[in-house]
Length: 553
Picture 1: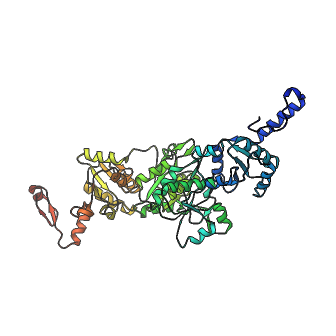
Picture 2 (picture 1 turned 30 degrees about the horizontal axis):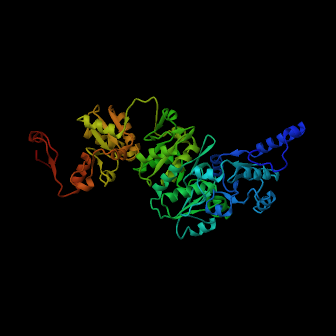
Picture 3 (picture 1 turned 90 degrees about the vertical axis):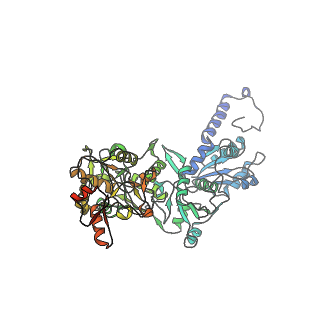
């Protein structure tokens, strides 16, 4: 009895055999064992999900009725049992016309049968044949995905392309980003269902479904999965089915079939563009709600950073970046997925991968800085290079709120546009609005702050939108003008509001809006019935009062 294969010939004891025959018999067994290695169901599945198309195939030896009821993905059925002649199996197998370069996994319900089949396949020229230990029962026990579930339908690339202008489905490419960027269906987004970590492949179930839920909350929205192996497509479709998505289509041999048919393809992520440092610098001056994310690792970012950037250092696990941690960090201070986001780093591939993650999570307006941080500095653009004098200091929203609450004379300045400040989202309670938008605002900004707080040693806290570019710019202006105690709320009003800190809503109450003296003067000049009330003590008003004001202490 060798590896489950019962000897059916005459019984011969070793005592009756010459030594040469014994050695030949042993060598034959060893060669067969080495040529057809065993493999666990988990190892086999890892290979299946990491190879696209038909590079790996499972040979399911079970009865056709069992196969039709349940089967592993990427499998074909060639029935064989111990009472059959092996030549019958080989004849049926040849009808499948499987190339000899394909890696074969033999899956049955008995090791003896699987051994005989695998050795027979090796004898006819198939060099990569492995036996899946435990057969189909072990596959089920391990909870591995079966072939495409009932809620998902299979369709050709041509059928999906025809439907693009009818049902307008969302094309989701589930391959790794490094494969996606080499070429993908035009208009498709990348949401990887698989990630390679130190040479092994891990399914990204939670990250994949998190991205789907964010971008496609409607369970009846038509979703099309393509790219990757049949095994990987089966896994992703099963996750969607379990989450009650009811309109899922799977394109087998996805991108390969799409490309072969001549349908539109692309070789870059469709939701982000690459711009020069100077172009990005101009955008920072023009757009009020733009965020600048520094994606460099912490050891690099401490050398210096671009003015107004927020550092989201990539968190690594076993040498690979944790995409979910990155997405969670970005969503905290940049919840608006349609607002512009700029990524800056030192490694183009890493930044493109980060952009692809954001694309998959639904961000639609992404820019990558060509040349990274070094290019930014070489172009002479605003950057902080360490060592730094510590002015302005950075603080969290909670720290900024604590500071203005503890210091009676602290001045909290909201540097967003007037529209944002007075909008439905509100503004930090107690903040005055002194907008910063472009270098031409520098003198006006400094004059307005001096009017609000002439003491250069007083505490001044600046807060912007979701990013810190405008607030950092204003902080630099104040520090250069001699202010010594300036703090910037690093993640802006988005974090302030997310943390539940006090917010005033001028749009809702309509009764009190903070303005600078210059803004108030402009308002008085433009409204015939405007009234200026001085609420100071009568003696103070009598000593000096604003022109046109009335005293109501």
